[in-house]
Image (cartoon, rainbow, N blue to C red; front, side):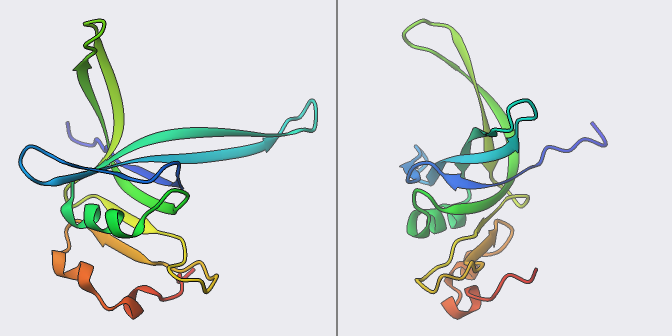
Length: 152
């Protein structure tokens, strides 16, 4: 359909270490659980409230899987761009169809940016941005190229 767009952008923290698995074809896939939160002041009570949403993220791009495996851990602050995908599966215990909606990073419209500092310098530096349209050589950049200040 012309004029449609399936794009997800999230900034959040990982709730657990990434799960890396091998697929049948030998390629790796990474699964992440990312939390996004919003807070507000309740008008009636004046109390501070917070709501957290959990997002399932699946990464098929091998370059991004390698970065996630090496550098991303529980609690990491990340920015991701991907697409929503709903898959259908059968619950073996009940035989009923189940559905899971995930953010998928695959293809040239996907990216992952780590927002935490790389070392102990305390700065919030852009550590890595890897668009899947870039060749794998881009992942082997000198680390000094990756520690520039965020330009905004």
